[in-house]
Length: 219
Length: 219
DNA sequence: CTAATTTTTGAACATGCAGTCAGAAAAAAT
DNA sequence: ATTTTTTCTGACTGCATGTTCAAAAATTAG
Image 1 (cartoon, rainbow over the protein chains, first blue to last red):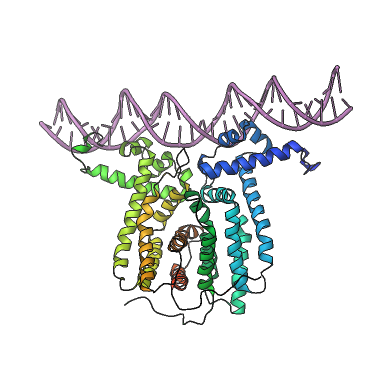
Image 2 (cartoon, chains in turn green, red, purple, yellow):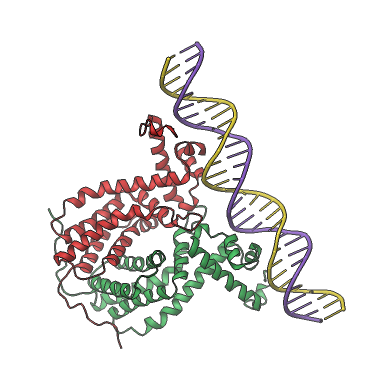
């Protein structure tokens, strides 16, 4: 591994280094998904990779560095998965929203372990001072994706009036809970789940001209 | 504290014991909400309570016992808060659902620290073997509450056809994320948030006779 | 006031952690 | 074949954790 040399031959990783880094990241993901972030020590990850713990710290500058790499890797995978499926549906906000939701479920369905590991990291990771350890900013592009679609639909009148933030948060939470459901019950019919979520948020967002002020609160 | 004597004078706690237990539970909640579950060591909790760590283990049979008590306490508080507000709205499933959601937001608004602590515990807590530490069964009454209302609405035809489980999970996640939003941004207008969630799930559930099979997927 | 009991302390203990390091082993370069 | 570099090991450090425990302090009972 290079430490000072990074200025000279940056990016030039040996075959072994590339392979080991990938292997360690993969084992970290599995370990976190299996045991939870709190129990995923370097020793556990090293055991799964069948190396000594020193190897991990030879390739990564500490545990935090490894975890950041895990998060970055999964988010990169996610963006690569989503981009083509989102780009083709840009002729209406409704279509864009619903295909974004559907593609998200598809991504989770095809990468459950990765997503579960990242969920664990995001929800458990704090530093000693209590601040969130792993930058919520990594999630921002995803949030922005939904936010832009919802604002677009407001401009075109496809969507009813609602607080964009509340809707974004609700959609994202509805998606992000799926990995943990899947872990508890692996046989969930995700195609049906996807259809349900799509229809749920279609109805929640669309502007169908129904009087919005039906009072439901009793006296 | 009694250990074997529990069979004899069960429930008869001294004044000091009752007060200390309550104080320690309260400090545990604050510590977990502030620092996160992972950083909430007995030492931290003891420091906040201004006692030595030994005191905690004198009144509780270990850390897990304390955490269980925290969870039980918050859930009991929650049930006490919810019961009167739910019981009065039992003449229609729609009313019951929407008032349940509204009351849930109200509870979070009036107990943000408690709820945040429990969320931290539920999401972070695993034992050494990787199993969930704190029984998801504590959550079951709440889930059952929503489930029963949704099934009731299906029977009466107030609600459209949807998978009850998906809807329950989505509603609960929409509610449970609020404490963490609140922690990041304490000035959120929860009344507006509540109105948004109520309308969102009203539209998501109600049976308005609109053709449900509007195709949104392009060829 | 004295004795018994409850409560609290603070030191000790075992365990597990992230991270360090000297040197062995393997691979690459000469 | 020999040197140089990369890769890997396993013992070690220092620290934080949950828990135990003997004894001190405070409270209660007789």
